[in-house]
Image (cartoon, rainbow, N blue to C red):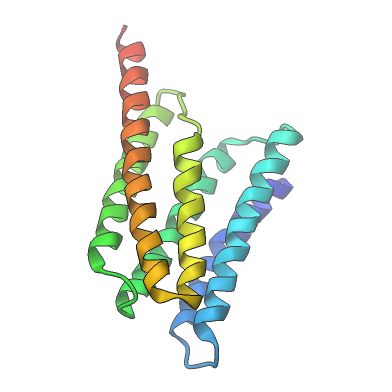
Length: 173
């Protein structure tokens, strides 16, 4: 275990803590749960930076880092849907996108190929973090930005699908 992997495990542990606090009756539970979400985002950036800078990239990190991100995002969107902050279609679009990405990534990983994150995925992730943060202060603006984030996630998905198809063609040749 290295520091990036420890941060990834920490981020995984934050998922149920986020949900517990989000649904708790404590004062400022929305604010506190979103703070946990932002901490998860910060540890994601930090573990990626450390892993790349110090060449600490591991198979565990390649698999678990995006899984931690996906679990956190889906959990946050589920919670926001359950409390009627956002429409359920947002959650379903992201679940379908993420399941497709997991299946495609698993197929490539079994062939020792990995599609690294790219600018489209990073922009989409950034938009989700910003929109969910803004939702605390301005629900209408936060909702609008979440819809923009969903659109960017769809664009990112088609970009990854294009890369996936190119990699599959390389494998077949």
